[in-house]
Length: 64
Image (cartoon, rainbow, N blue to C red; front, side, top):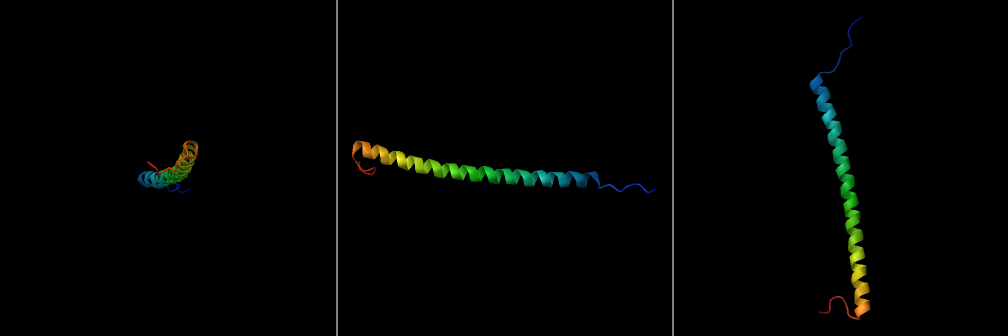
């Protein structure tokens, strides 16, 4: 019975690194998307805080 052919160990390492690289890229893309959403939420909340404080003091936000 002939021996089973196996891939060269270096090729296996390179393939494994490629898989890990893709997973890391996907992870970074997900983190970046969440950070973008968080930034948008923070901007909206900050604008709402400025509006509420302005209403409280009775002056528009850009009045000095």
